[in-house]
Image 1 (cartoon, rainbow, N blue to C red):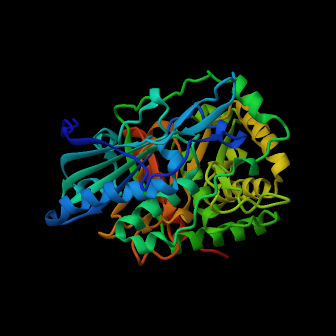
Image 2 (cartoon, rainbow, N blue to C red; image 1 turned 90 degrees about the vertical axis):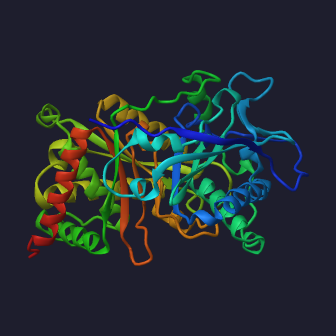
Image 3 (tube, rainbow, N blue to C red; image 1 turned 45 degrees about the horizontal axis):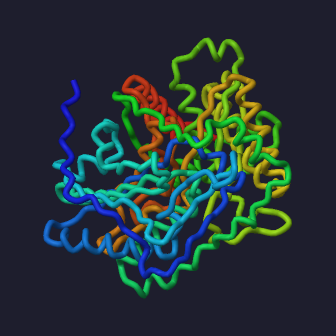
Length: 455
């Protein structure tokens, strides 16, 4: 029986505005790559830090001051998502001088080492550390700093329609560098706010907004009995996956997929995830299951790439299906199917021009919906360097995307720790029975990898 969760004590509810002042009223129109996320649940992140009690007061004050400095560069995050005045289906991120971000300071009587672990934890025990987004006001961002026993949790909630993970982590790095010292912050490039760089020749924007509940954002309720756990694949694990897939493709007389570390990790987790599900009927019925990965298209846009510092959404869909019976097949066969599908999805999306990107979005979404197959999505990226977000008191002990408990996605990041090499970690949220099945599938698959003889 689960113990009752500790009570969160709110010490301060503040608002933080961009400083120095001087940014004029600005409206950034949502592009077709932004509008897709208008009704989606916000992204909820937590950064856990170990911290000595003696410097907490200074740390909390410095977090607030440095936040105002970072918001000067990322001022739209202090604005509001709203329907563009005079229109019925156009939306914008509007900033008015004086707009601000909600910043909560709280206390939670739990040891940081109890929460910053890989093993399954109750989501209900972590959720109080996540700030509340003022959705009714259109706020795109909310932040919270929570004092723990032996540490600190920095929580962020961001509406995905405002920007993608590349932009939001760039904001976090800017905030952290401002907290660590103004000189470091000056090294950060200025965000590019020009939304005209993203064009929509196929009118995907209009077809998307017509299917949505205008002006209403949906927030998925959190299940009371969800668990959150992290599963790590070491550099050696990933290398073994690559070797197994290469040999299996030769035995199948099929061209080997481009099996990068990300492809190997996603294919391995996807295969375990599907084997852990209790749906034999779907396997017997030949159902197709899908994986969806968001690909950063800034450097891939053709004919003209978009600057890496572009602020907004610039991700495209990498989605591919596979027959569930093949995906859950034992040993190397299932791994080959999974990794081939993931590699195919990424290659197809990466070669898409800006003029075809919106068409690809529509095609892939329709394919998954019409087939009735289930979908596993991957959130975050190992390229975001989330374990380098250092506010001046050390690297995070643990980083979580709590919102995977709402969306059912998996959260991918680089392995934490300076000696983690090229390993990757994946956050998964399931109910207790599902978590036990997934843990067993994962452990069995890892053991098989390292005891399997590769001919």
